[in-house]
Length: 115
Image (spheres, rainbow, N blue to C red):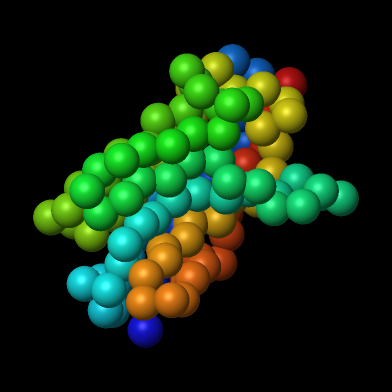
């Protein structure tokens, strides 16, 4: 089993920044990749960014150049730095980890971009 706990969401004005954190625990040696997805009201969940065990990174086109995913292996934490936020970035953000044929999800953290 793998457990994920997100933090860092909140309300921010357009153009502002937020950093989301995801602390992973449990059988972390089974994890092949981690990342962030988001789900806006009335929309399906979409991939935002991912990072593999070997450090390969992928971003959704909508966030390229504005968001950055990183990890601190010593702290078992994955981050999502979000800059130049737009109202359309408003969503619930979920951390995930995949490995051993399974996908684990955090509880989600809400991000609202509004003036």
